[in-house]
Amino acid sequence: MWTVSTYVLKKKLAGNKRFPLVLMLEPLFRCSLACAGCGKVQYPPHILKKQLTPEECFAAVDECGAPMVSIPGGEPLLHPQIVEIVNGLIARKKYIYLCTNALELKRRLPEFTPSKYLTFSVHLDGQRDHHDFSVCREGGYDIAVDGIKEAVKRGFRVTTNATFFDGTDPNSVRAFFDEVMGMGVEGIILSPGYSYDKAPDQNHFMGRARVRRLFRAILSNRKPTWKFNMSPLFLEFLMGDRNYECVPWGMPTFNIFGWQKPCYLLQEGYTESYKELLETTKWEEYGVPSGNPKCANCMVSCGYETPAVIEGFGSWKGFVSMVRGTFNKYPDQHALKLLDDAASHASAPLVQIDQPDHALEETNA
Amino acid sequence: MTAEVLKYTLEQVEALELAPGAEHENLEGWVPTLASEDDLRQALEKAFDYRGDVTLTLKNGERIEAFIFNCQTGPTLAESWVQYFSPTSPDKRKVSYAEIARLEFSGKDRAAGKHWEDWVKNYNEKKAAGEKNIALVPDALD
Image 1: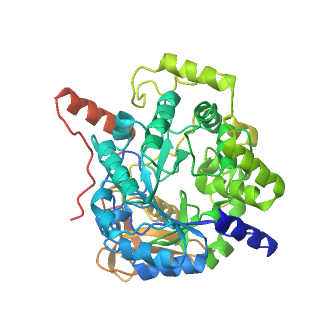
Image 2 (image 1 turned 90 degrees about the horizontal axis):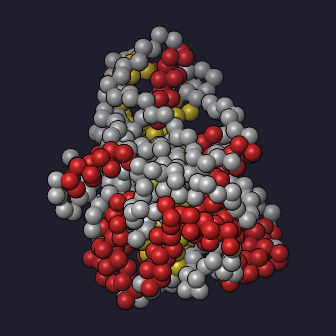
Image 3 (image 1 turned 90 degrees about the vertical axis):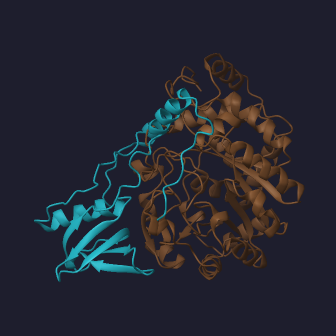
């Protein structure tokens, strides 16, 4: 927290208009899962075989200068030099979130050394049946949980990360929070899904009104045991209590193609350098106020957590709101009603494929 | 706004319940007619969005199998280019629109058949047949 807060303050005092908070470093697109609808891994084999070298990763990190590096993919643990990449980033004192499906985590853990700079962020989309169905692999949850428990036992920092799509049962999500906190993880990361046009599946993404209703149901009336590894102000944004404009330059993406325009989810071209990305991207063409239909339903953290963090560390008022949000349980009777309504409709633990629209439908949140 | 139409007001966006996704065309095997400059520009824009390899035939007769991942359009064809990886070369390469004579969507569309509904149908059929450990597996790399 100290590193991020001083970084944000320094950038603001220096008058930097645009600066990166988290580098999304995708060292490869290859994955050991084949989740239906995932738009990150739909490439020909010769592309899936490519990967960034450690030197390319370090050069991107050094050029960008972000204090945090998220390593998604593909599955980073399939990269043969991932340990070298991680160690190089630790040596640079970067806070790393290595995003993994954890199918290989338990086996690979002995190669890593626990560090305050390294967090394994394990993809878990919900309770066992829900997660397995979501990642299209029965048994995936149990393997991932095994990996989480082993990582916690070995002293690693571990979070879970989940993406929620239309049809998500908020009661099941809350029970899932209880489960993961019981595993000893440091916190939970979550995000609504987003219908970026590269994704093969285009039919299960919530609009903003529904996202806010779902997250109000999930995140109100919090239990004391729940911890979130996210800005409290961003969570308030998901619940509909705050409004932010997208800040796509806050979490730039680098992969085998180069620096991705304009953000982690849209692929509208690439540049050779981060400087070129900042200077040549027409930022005004993105985000909700632009009217760009591609941005219409996006409330994803890669665009909206940066402004929340900047607000939280950029002013006393923001800081106080952030501290208050950290301890607030957000009691909300209407949200309890949303949960009751969802419970009365729920018939199975899985995403409701045949009736995707029922839960939370008849509310006025 | 580049190749975009202002489609939503702020109020409409905030009230969206379900997000209309993009329509994906079935382009695999398509050989567009490149009779005009506009034809070429539109076809290359689709090739940029395509999740498979295409085959470019240049005006000098060279044929290039390519995964196009980047493009930049300028006022003339000579100032416009696509950037690609070829299966036979490790390096990124660029070719000007002005050099391209023919385009074929020759490679498999890697996004085709990967809708959520496809998985649900597949899952239900296997479950009904009594299968265990049902899963989708990544495409083979060789």
